[in-house]
Amino acid sequence: MAIAGPAGWDVPPNWSAIQAVGQGDSPYAGGIAALKAYHNLPAHAAGDRAPVLYWYPPLTIPVLHTLAWLPGWLLGVLFPCALAAGFLLQLRAGYQMASEERRRWLIFFLPLAAFFPGLLCDQTILSGNLAFILYGLVLTAAIPGWRRNKWLLFYAAVLVASICKPPMLTLLAFPIIVGKRQWAPACIVGTSGCVLFAVQPLLWPAQFKEFSLAVQLVLDWAHDFGFSPSGQLGRLLWQNKLPYFRATTLAYLVWAAAFAFLLLAISRHIHRNPHLREQWIPIALTGTILLNPRIIFYDTTPLTIPLLLIGWRALSLGSEHFTQWRGSRAVSPAVSLSPLQIFFKDRKHLAPILVGAGLFAACNIADGLWGNWLPIELTVLLMVFALGLWSLLHPSVLLSPQDSYIEALPYNPECSYHSPIPAVLGESTSE
Image (tube, rainbow, N blue to C red; front, side):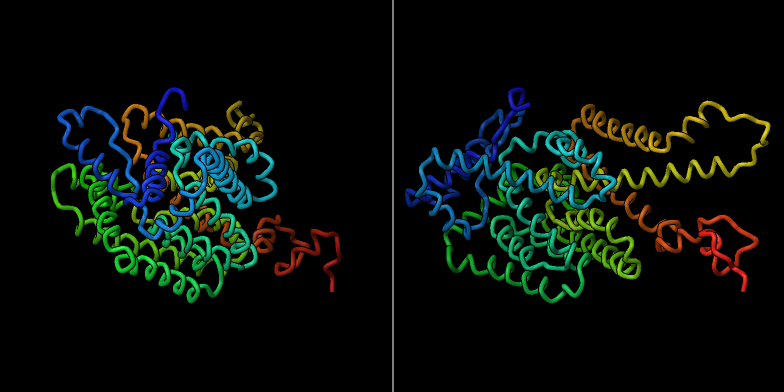
C-alpha cells in the first residue's frame, strides 16, 4: 500500500516547521506561500494534491524549538517509533473494551485497523499524522477512567492533545457520560484548554495571524472540512460557492446540543442499569468522536475496534431474535426441519458473520465505485452507533442478569411463581 500510493504526506510540513523555527523564521510562512503558489497554477484542479500546511496553533512553537535542537537522523528514528507506539496503544485500548469471551477472536482482527480505519478502506496510517500519538496517549489514559473512575491522566492527556488539536477538547464528554461526578473536572479542563488557546494571540500575535490565515486557506482552497455533519454541510456550500462559516457554526451547535442530550440521556439509563456498562463503553467513545466539529480520517482509527465490537453484538442479538422467531412458529412435530433451518439453528454465530461481512463489503465496494470516502464513513459511524443504541436499549437487554436468568427459566407448576430458582436447583419448595 505504501508503494502503490502516497505516504508520509503530513511529515514534510512538520519537518519544515521545525527547521524554520530553528532558523528563527515562522513555521507557517513556507506552507502558506506553497499553497498560494499551488492555487495560482492553472492546472491545480487537475488532480494534483494540494500542499499540506503546518497549521497547529502557535502554542506548539516552544515544542518546535526543542525539537530543532535534536539531529535530523534522531528525529527520523524517534517519530516513526512514536507513531507505531501510538497506534498499538489505540489497539490496546480497543482490546480492553472487549469481554474475555470476545478477546479470543478479537486478537486476530486487530490488524484490520491499519487497513480499514473506521471499517472503511483508507491509507490513513501512512500519513504520519500526530493524531496517532495523541489518541494513543488519550485512550490509554482513559482505561483507568472507565474501569475505576480515575480520570486524572485522561484529563492531562486531553489538555496536552488540545495544544496541537483544539477540537480534541470535545473528548472531555467521555468521562461525563461514562464516569461518575465528572462534570466539574471536565469543565475545569475544558476551560483551561480554551484559555490556553485564547492567550495565544497575546503571546504570539504575528504567528497567530499566520496560523489563522493558514486555517482559512485550508478551508477555502483545500476544502478540508472533515466529514462531520457540519463539515459535510460546509463542503456542500463551498462547492456551490456559498458562504459557509455561519451556517456550519449554527449546524454544529444544533447537532452537538442534540447529540450531547442523547448521550447524557443514555448515560443516565446506564447508571440505572450497571450491567450494561461494558456494552456502553465503545458506544460512548463513538458518540464522543461524533461530537468533534471536524472529524477527519485520523479520528476513525481509534474507533475501528469499538465499531467492530458494537456491530458484532448488534448483529448477534438480531440473529438470536431471528432464530427465536423461527423457533416460535407452530411446526408440526412430524415435519422435519429444512437444511436452511438446521443451518441457522446449529450455527448461531454464522448468520451475524455473514451479515456483517456483507455490510462491510458493501460499504467498501460503494467507496470504490463512488470514490467519495467522507460521506460513506459518516454513514458507517452513524449506522453502527444506531445499531449500538438499539442493542443497548432492546427490552431483552434491559433486564439485569438475574432478572433475565429468572425470565428464561421454564415454567414449573411445582415451583412457587415468585421463587423459581429453588426448584431448578433441586431444592424442596414445600413449606
